[in-house]
Image (cartoon, rainbow, N blue to C red):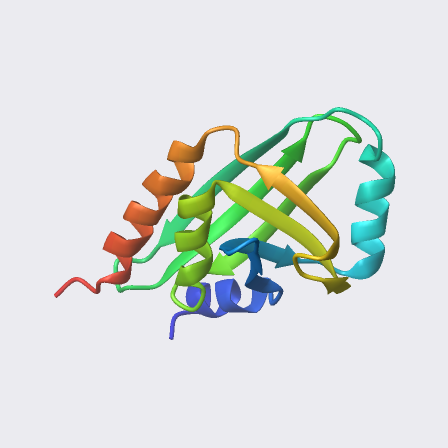
Length: 141
């Protein structure tokens, strides 16, 4: 295993999941409770937009990572999460399917309470990213 691959694996965010919301699977990033509370306190009650960038990193050997960058228009918040697409492909399938992303704390009940939902402003970005990820996951011979 290369040093670069080891470094990326060490930076992968552990809190990647999906949950059922009214019969649809929604991708969710679970973040540390204090960080989640701070984020919500900065944006609560304000109208805001959240730019969502999906930066795909691949090595041509079937290893794919996606850096999810969330830039909030209010509160001076920029959050980055590295996801191992090899392990969490379902997360990206649901993201492309729903164009929704949830942020949650570990104490939240997914789909019931204390979940911050984000509607992707450009759904085609998630669909394009899924296509790139799926092609990159196939090792080149």
